[in-house]
Structure formats: C-alpha cells, structure tokens
Length: 384
Image (cartoon, rainbow, N blue to C red; front, side, top):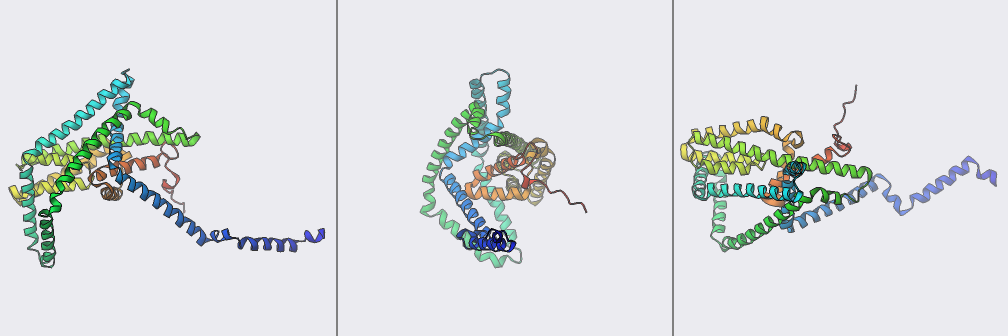
C-alpha cells in the first residue's frame, strides 16, 4: 500500500481532489477576478461612507472645525517668528503673547481698513456695479440669440424680486443675528486655540505621534514639518501677493480716475485669497465700475491693468514667495475650489487650496525627504 501512495498518478489525483474540495468552499467565490472586484467595491463603499460621515460631521460642527483649521494655518504662518524669539531666549509664554497680539492687531487692522473703505462708499459701489451689469445686459440684448433666452431671464428676474419681497427674505435678519453669534464664538475659539498652538504646538504634535514607531514615526515627523512649511508659505505668500495686487490695481485705478478706487482695491486684496476665481471677480467688478463711470475705453484699460498685474504676480512674484511647494496645477486648484465651495461656502473656497497643497506636500515626503509616495513618483521612460 505504501508503494501505491507514492505513485505520481495517485498523488496527482489526490491533489485534484483537494483542489476540487477547495473550489467548493464558500470563500472560493472571492478568489477569482470577479470576487476581487467585489472586494474592491466593498472597500470603496466603506471609504465613501466614512468620508461622507466625516464631511457631514464637519458641516454640523463648522463653529469648531473652521476655527481649528484657521488657527492651525495662522500658527504655521507665524512659526518662524516663534522660533526666532525662542532662539533669542524669550520665554515661550511671553513670545506667544507677543505673537498673538501681533496677529490680533493685524487682523483687526485689516478689518478696520475694510470697514473704513467700504462703509461710506458701499452703496455707490453697489449702484455702480448694478448699472454696469445693466449696461452689459443691454448690450447682450442687441445680440441675435438674445430672443431665445429673454423669457428665461425675465422669469429669473421675477423669481429674485418675489424672494426679496417675501417673508423668507425678511427672516434673513434673524439668520444674520445667529451668524454673528457664531462668528463671535468661532473667533474667540480661534484665538484660544491659536494661543495653545503657538505656545505648545511642538509638544501637542509629539503627543499625537506617541502611537507611531520606527519608520512610521519618522514619516509622521516629515509630514508635520512639511505641513507647517507649506501652510506657512501659503499664508505669507498669498498675503504678500494680495497686497501687491491691491496696490498695483489701486495705482492703475487712480491713474485712470476710476471712482471707488480704494474699496475696489480692498476687494482685490480679499478676493486674492481665492486663487484664479478671485482675481477674475475683482477684475470684472472693477471693469463694470469703470464702464459706468468713464465709458468702454476706461473699462478696457482697467481690464488691461488687471491682466498685467496678475501676469506679473503669477510669473514673477508668486514663484519666488511660495516656491515649488505650492505649485499646483490649475485643474487641481479649480477642483479644490469647487469642492471647498460646495462643502464650506466662501470659507471653504479660501481654505481648500492650502489644505490641498498640504496634502500634496505630505505625499511628496512620504518615503523620505524629496521622495514622494511610490504611486506619486514620475515614471521613468522605458529605453527603446
């Protein structure tokens, strides 16, 4: 019997019998190509459910999440200042108080400038922009295809008018009070969180890294350092670029004698924090005001000034201030802006690009300094 057990044909038959029994097992259904596809589909569904849960939670807790993110970005922006003062022997608490006061003064100064520039001229700015839009619509009405959409435009205008005169619009005052309360709460929370980020940021980060060991710990350290660098560079670079854009366009508007030059320059500064879209909106508004006040030639010159300033900023100033760490493709920026706007409105649009840049920065140092994750590395050309 032992001789027959070692016979090759007998061994082969026993192996086929084992394979046949394995193929009848329930888990064998997941072993073929379709089964693997099903496993991937289940994994994707789980990831989507988790992501949707996180997004819904963030939308419900915006009073908490948005101040946290803003405090983190501001702490990253002023991290070099904190490091410089600590290096000069200034106590951490005193350095934190001085930095926090500087941040509050800067934000307060910007807010006061906006209020001062817009408070007495907002009605004129709104009227000028409305008149400019009316002139633009009047010009569009002369086009051959306007008759096809005239009814839709009238219907849209009547809908807006009905809403403005309805009780729903009047209830917006109550919503405004609630929004003001949320803003004050969020601002106070942001200041408090920013204080702790500035004072104990490195210690807080080390506390979060306690579960990591070995290469995972070093990777987390690289990601943290890269995130601080990217977010800090974004805030400092964008603020500088926005100031240069506002000053350049203000000079152009003053030379062309366009009214409301200061409020328009303030809007340029604010909208510059929304890449691509912000510059377009600011330029359009300035051109509409110039169109009503000084005519078509002045509007074209304003458009030329806006385009010139944006080209100088995009080709010379922005690469020097932000470097390659913030170099994102325009397509990626537009997608990030769209997603951020849908999820968080204007605040989401402002925060979407730096968060996207920070994520890409983390990927770029995933496997080492200057060594991106394997799937993100550029493919080497195959030698023919």
